[in-house]
Image (cartoon, rainbow, N blue to C red; front, side, top):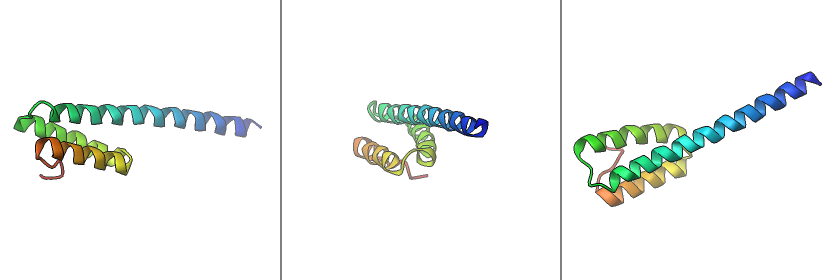
Length: 82
């Protein structure tokens, strides 16, 4: 019984951490799009690329692809380019 309770607590904690990570990833996407909205300079583009790499690694694939597409549409710059 204690084993099941411990598993339930760990599962709840994992869910909570996943929700926090989703919030952070959403915030990163908003920052990237904020950069796109202000006619970004070279330094801002490099920052957006760095943030997008984090997003690419931790976000849902479709969310990362959406940010990539929107940024390119607004700026003419691909975050995939090195």
